[in-house]
Length: 366
Image (tube, rainbow, N blue to C red; front, side):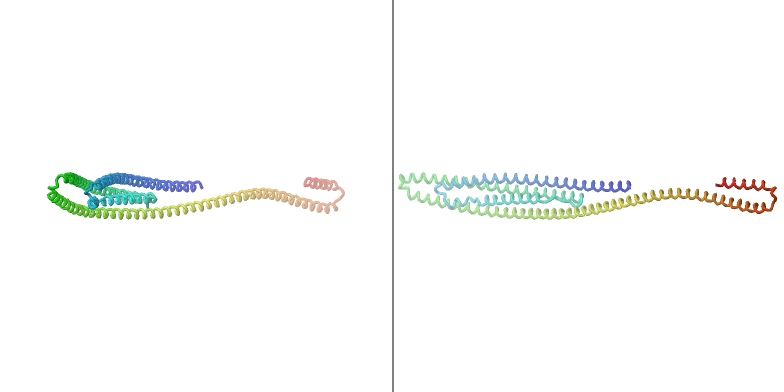
């Protein structure tokens, strides 16, 4: 019984140690994966915030330029529409989209339970995920470089707009000075009109040239933005694939846990059956021990009864022997008595002695 209990205890202890090792490996893998994802998310959020700040600054500069252009008298609605704040709005929208995608990815990652089929497969899967996350970080860095390049182009474009507005202001100031001197130079009015027409024509030509340049830049920016959207779509597809792989790993881990619980329940039932068999065996041993004790007591009683019977038989044998001796003596006495009746009285003393001897033997036998 002690050997079976020791074997059962050793098996149970080994089983508990295996379960503890599996749980520890799973926890370490989950902690490592979560730390990597959190650090990546933090970096992405910080970069997005910095980009947002830069976009806000660009937007403020654009608003200031727009306000300065509106204050100038010769700068109308056509020139204000040439500031083209659509790229900045698109950058802002794309930044918000990136932030929402990052937040959604973080929610999905935090909502998922980190999984593993076996310790080796789980570690391999996590390493593969870390590699893919590093690739996504590289892709995010590339996107940031593209955004920086776009920001640089926008700054250059705003600088050109500012220079153009400055030139327009200078031209307006020149026109104002001409208007002031118009009263004193009525003779030069036709010539001034021609100069004004030439100036207006030149400004119209300049505006047309800049309009074409802006259209070309807008087309270039749209192409770059389309390429960035494609890259973002590819990144989202990769993230979806990673999520599916993570779900598959979680399902496999759940199956393994179910099998482990089944194995543990079967092992517990086997241990319970074994303990019940041991209890039944112990009960049977106790019953056999009680029967053995009762049998030994009966054997002792039988031995005592046999001793008493043997003594009784010996006494009966002695009594029968004494009875036979008494019968023989009685027969001999009768025979002697018969013979004595025919003997003379001289022999009376001899008969008396024989009777006395017979009486003494009877008393001794009694």
